[in-house]
Length: 394
Ligand code: TGC
Image (cartoon, rainbow, N blue to C red):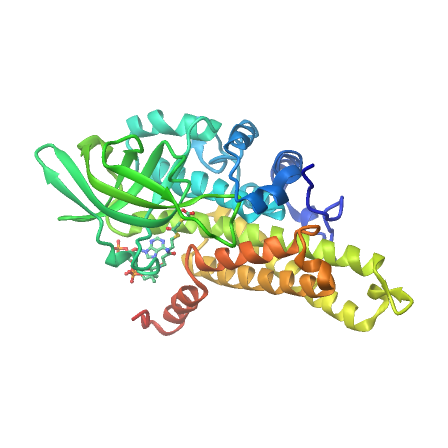
């Protein structure tokens, strides 16, 4: 019988009661996302993680709820605020980072690329199906030689008459083996360009990367383009240079900054519950100063991270959000979520490593989140450049 992760029935309110500060529309989206996450995703999540199973059958439920590309306007997308989108990411990741990753790859990466850089025809063709969950998109930027430096990509699209011929390899591409369309970034004689590649194109191959110890409810793939022939109208006409993919990464980093706090909240809830109910040396462990001090530190970082995410969202809705602010939030919130999950694991003692509790799963997932969409080191260096004016990436 499948078992759901144990965590508090009610989301932890904390001291700042962050939910109370969400605008009304965001609170409604939060309610919708929480209910899909808890009713659809959570019941089988531990078993799916154990079996390394991605349940594509859940995708329509996310689409029907309006959660896919929900921050985009038109073409079947909900046109929700940035704060609402962030709150939804938090609720999904409170259940599992693998499913928040699905929401991000589909909405923040693939759909944002099409909505921002696509032609009217491309938007009409792909966005309504992606928003409804009838189609799946992926985003192929990272290459096997290393994801931190997209400028060094070797995947190349050459002109051949009126067509393009795409050749190269990508790695860690979420959903590629189940996707209908891949947004592929490639070098051309005219700099980096984006292409929409139907995944049934001859020469397109996606292989699931086996053996992951994190993100086991989602799929990441090696992808190969073996002279994939594309018409010119497969090119995203408005995308020129690395600004194209980096604009999409901004969206994904925004969702991560919120989502990581969802994983952190669940771990904190579990630790508080345990502190109240576990008796050692004749009293609940939560009556011990050492445990209370740890819980207080976890609460501090959870609430600071959630308030930072809320600030990002309000700035994004006001049109003032800067990429460096996203680096602050991605670096801080994932790092602190890992610390919170680790502390929760300790409070649960031996039980913390079992699948009776969701903590070890969140801890493993967050290690993957720490790496993608810019590692800790890359975001530290982006901030170093911001402070000094000198790039030190090499
Ligand atoms: P740089 O010279 O800084 O910039 C090149 C052009 O891009 C513009 N730009 C941005 N535009 C929008 N948002 C941003 N955040 C931007 N950052 C840079 C910049 O203005 C410039 O535009 P233009 O018009 O002047 O040409 O580029 P660089 O090569 O020096 O960048 C260095 C660095 C380290 C910051 C960048 O390479 C970087 O962010 N690296 C990390 C990449 C990363 O996060 N990769 C992980 C992707 S995750 C993934 O692919 C998998 S998705 C999840 C899944 O599929 O499961």
